[in-house]
Length: 280
Image (cartoon, rainbow, N blue to C red; front, side, top):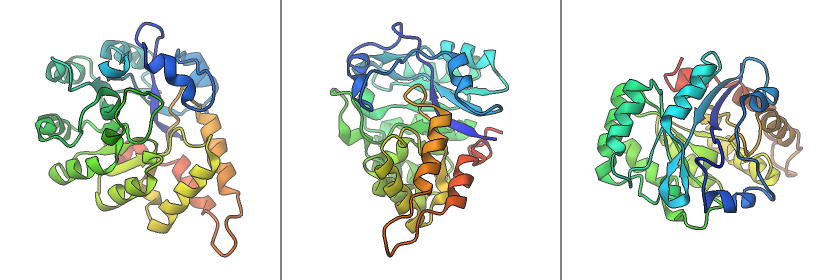
């Protein structure tokens, strides 16, 4: 079974505004249809794929998906989808949204977008959020790495910020999105030292050299087991992500260095991520 730990629900144009929508073509070289349709997702993923679906809240970047919409979408396919709530801590009422999404809507994790929303994820005033998540077994999916949105401050996307969070909250399960690209080395340094911190490899396959290099670093540092499969749908699909991982795994590599471990790539594709994140 494949577990996709990183997919989105957008119902454009209702919840995706500018600058996010206007600048999304920078994501990987052209227009991206951001409207999510279950039939399209299902048709581009293997049967039985289990999927974490998130919306997103970042007022600064023009993105705001109501948690109720995510809960309704996940509820339509409970055997396939696991919904997460989203928070923008720069906006009033986020603490109430946290409890409502968890207790009333039954959402099972939290998506944070520090760079898009413009906040420091390591800020001590967020410790209440992290403590609540750890106490209730809500894993975090945190955007790390670059973006196409011009208004989003890159400094808040650096993976090293989550090192401080993990030190203060060692039982909190976190997934750092996109292997922190292009700060993969920093991301690997963080996930290697914390038992419950992982990284997903979503939205990387369409930059094949970068993906090969990132996985080569992961292999050298011995952190294959800390990498989780994700797609970042609708920016790409599960099938394309699997194909891309296998393609870079087949590259002979640099003369004098061993190639990527293809067995580890298959383990990555089929990682039991729900078990690791306490979502089984």
